[in-house]
Image 1 (tube, helix red, strand yellow):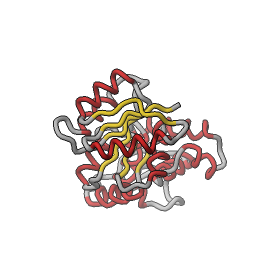
Image 2 (spheres, one colour; image 1 turned 45 degrees about the horizontal axis):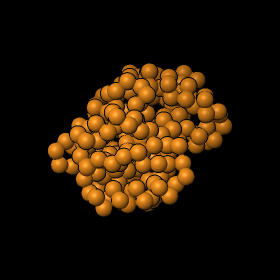
Image 3 (cartoon, one colour; image 1 turned 90 degrees about the vertical axis):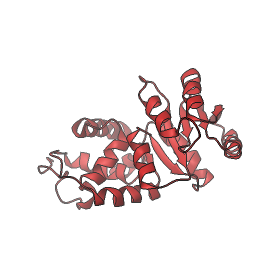
Length: 226
């Protein structure tokens, strides 16, 4: 059973989320909080598997609360940001804070439920709308390419991650095992100096990696090894 903590200052939103998740046999709502400070305290006490976090709240906001939760030693809750705002600074701040996933409140119930399961399984999640915004944002302020060499497989896995695919989806697409995917991801994170999959995806857009065709070098630095 996956336990979920809901953090949102809108009582109607909390009620709707609870009703939605209570209908799922593998999900249960462990608690609710109306601001970031209460969310952090409940997350510390209840240790849920996933925290669904609003961003704009009175008092302590969701970005600050997310940053604290992801700083905890493992095992710590995964944080799925759920917000009505898709402004560049909101998206960038939430990702920089270490959120494991980002969905807009206009997501469908099925997308939200799938998103919770995705981050609970250890995968990163960025909605297509957020991925497009990341591309536009970082295309405007791209620094020089980083000196990183990826193997061909690692480059393929990074492209799949940036497309928003989960471990099992990547495994199926590349005809490899889920464990092999996790190994490639581990190597990717080490080479990129990324804390998690979300940061790896941000790097993929920021560095210009996603502008390159798959038959070009595996990374913006030296030609990737095979």
